[in-house]
Amino acid sequence: MIDVHCHYLPAVDDGAQDLQSALRLIRLARADGVRKLVLTPHVHAGRWDNSLGFLLPRFDAFRNLVASKNIDVELYLGAEVHLLPESLRLLNEGQIPFIGGWDGMKVMLLELPGGGIPPNALAAVRYLVGQGVLPMVAHPERNKTVMADVSSLEPFVEEGCLLQLTAASVIGEFGSRAYRTAQAILKKGWAGVVASDAHNASHRRTRMKAAFRFLRKHYGETVAERLLVSSPERLLNERQTLCMDTMARLEAVRW
Ligand SMILES: [Fe+2]
Image (cartoon, rainbow, N blue to C red; front, side, top):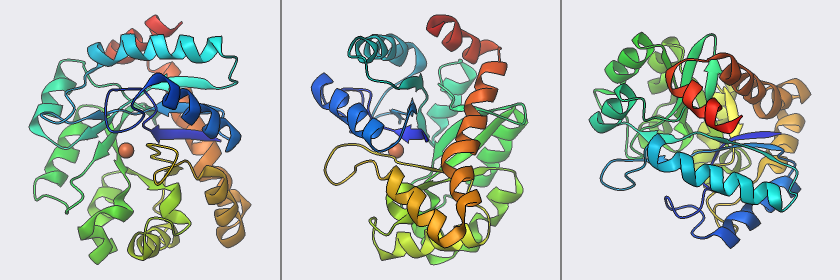
């Protein structure tokens, strides 16, 4: 499986706090059946002032450390970008690490405020799409507006946004409302990928294997495979073909 949303890069946000716990989380992910991971630190101005320039050297050092420990995983750098004007400025400056590509567009993991969908969110999404950036909405099943009315996501789906469900929500470990909302999104056929959004080894851990089994049982093998394997793989494949500006800088450093 491929996990396109996790907080394992040490000491850059509220995920892994040091190298030892980050290494432990990578090993736990591998044991959970994940072989490729996009590390997605928060980019959230005023809270976690991360940018590509700040994250890239830290990511490279961490990737080298993981390789030296002979852990059989491939790591990529992405980010979870909070919907803020500052994030759009970073985007214009080429300072946003993307997740990958989709239909020729760069994919940005976009975090809406958990409290709801702000009135300007759709306009921001349209602006991004106009810039060739496709938002992948992070964990919509945990958004209060969506939990109250899942059809509030419809305009985002119509704009082509990918929706990323959290593995723990899918299996019911993120509360009953997130569970019900995740099932409603799945039943509408709107889910794009399932990812862990794991932060630690206790209450925010990787649950990829359990989510795969749940989906296989309730929605069929094809759906489970698409959400946890083939669609994430497609994101990564297109990452390598998008060889311009930010992605080129990322790939140039990596290979
Ligand atoms: Fe996250």
